[in-house]
Image 1 (cartoon, rainbow, N blue to C red):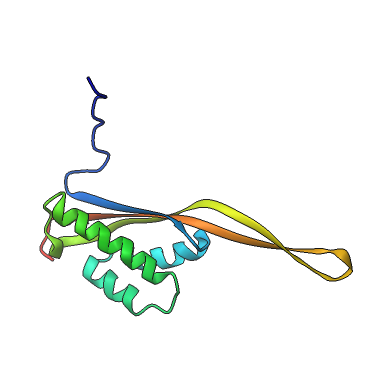
Image 2: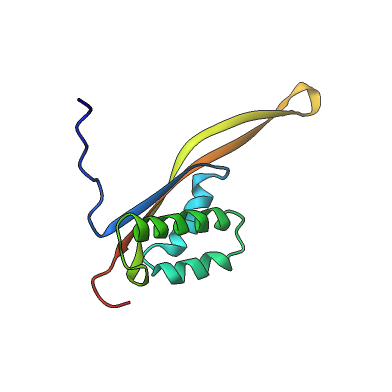
Length: 126
């Protein structure tokens, strides 16, 4: 006797990938996530590959994972996938300090973020 299985949170034509402890602020991560929202996955991968932002590589890795989950776990057609949602969330902030003049302290904040990407198979042709 085990636990009862929970119903699936996503629709049958959706797949997701999640990454936590990404070493950037959620605000900066959301700027990159906003560039791929609503785009076809192929176009989003090209956009991330040529982005100048440092964090674009991590976002690309999560998007590739979501595409692989859609193909292998949900048997969705990779050519019809679009990025339905790309959300950045706050994880935690490491607080550090640096000595400054006259006995004062300079605060250093090192934020971490979460990233969730949901891909959806579109009904029309790609």
